[in-house]
Image (spheres, rainbow, N blue to C red):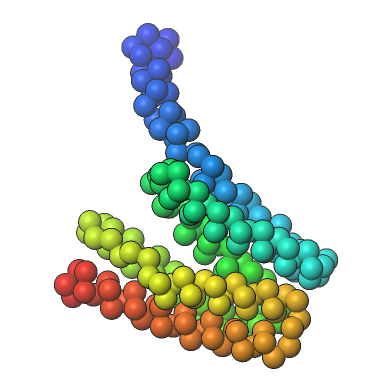
Length: 194
């Protein structure tokens, strides 16, 4: 059977079509998104073991820097791919959600706030998937960018134990998260004519 597949050209067609397409998709921006995903377990371990707040902050900031770089490089060099459009938001959500959930485990953030933040992330991802299945696109929202900045800043301040400002930014992040989520629901209804 294997011999007949080889002689029929099936394997070479598979390699040339699918594997080449996959390898072309793994450009520098996508490698940065993958690197961000690989940093998530390391971040969780460092936070939960209380190894070092400074190291946890450095890992988190390095991962956030890859978020800035991958998008910039992809746009500047015209390397935007379907894989990148999928990987980037997944990497972002994994990083933010893992950091917040780890901070709940350490009793540094109220669980209900993290449930709201993670719930919004899952709901928006679901809405975008439903819209995509209907050939509709719900584009990224400027409010979503602010949400990410405030969430990241809150995580950093909480990890560094900077009292008052950490709570203030956490509350602001929560409010912007809710506003951004509501905005996505409005766009979803409008785009799908509901």
